[in-house]
Amino acid sequence: MKRNIVAFSQNQHGHWVAELDCYHTLNDAVSPTAQAGNRTVNCLQCDALKFPEGLTAYKKTPTFREASIPKGLRQHHTTKLGTWGLIHVLDGTLTYIHEQEDITPINIKAGETAAVPPCMPHHVHASGTVTFFVEFYKKIP
Image 1 (cartoon, rainbow, N blue to C red):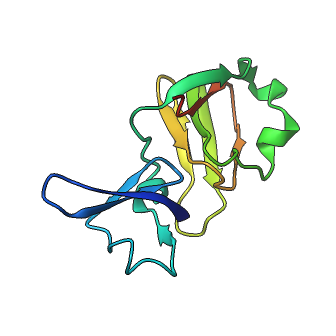
Image 2: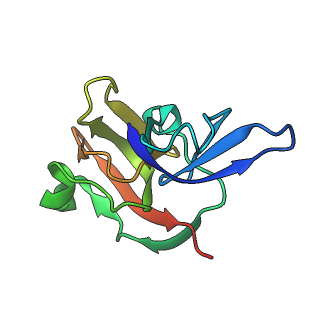
């Protein structure tokens, strides 16, 4: 998924690290001077649904069952820039469908979670009994 570079820093070895708007980092990045015209990179960690470290939960949905899943979650939607979601399945199985061609749907089973990167189009589907909620995270200074 394409992400914007928001800052650069150097690690202990003097290599450039790009900080992305999804809170992931890109090690061994091209220097800021060489990067001047292109501030967008593909974040493989978002594509792999890797939840970044250092985020704080700030809100969660009510607990939903298959019959009470809001229409907004069953159709195309995204989280805001800077907001990660974490789907918690308590019972049954929920299908988490990414609307990017290269990511296959994920069946999240009871006791499992799945990360929802910021701005990644997706929706969910229940094909049977399911109970789940979504928790939202961001970086809080």
